[in-house]
Length: 145
Image 1 (cartoon, rainbow, N blue to C red):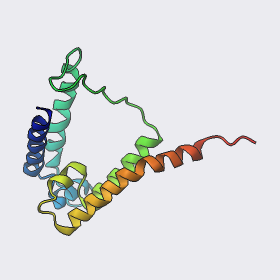
Image 2: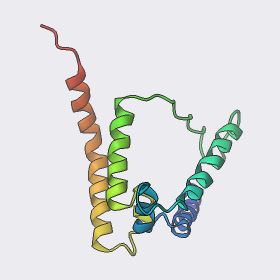
Image 3: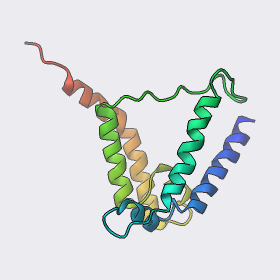
Image 4: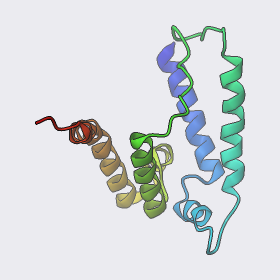
């Protein structure tokens, strides 16, 4: 049941990304080009994602999900080095390629070699991230003499 519902929800999400234009790299880059030829239409996509999710976090309090033990905890609103580095890298990739993780997977079937290269680089980055985080954490430790 879990696999079937995951497939259904993932497919619905992918279709939503296609319909909203999030898989169109020129549309995404137009949204990010605030000082140029700005395309504000993706603001509705962002609002259409943020508002229901904010409501969902409120509605899950004290409830149990159908297909899992518990709902995940809401993210803590902490701004730290990991958030700043991750957000910067995400924003750079999004601005340069016009894709982020969800839309890049949804666009794999029609994005050509560039889309495949993006997904391969994205997966490599995800695999390298824990190692790089350990390196950063080690370099931040105080040196004792």
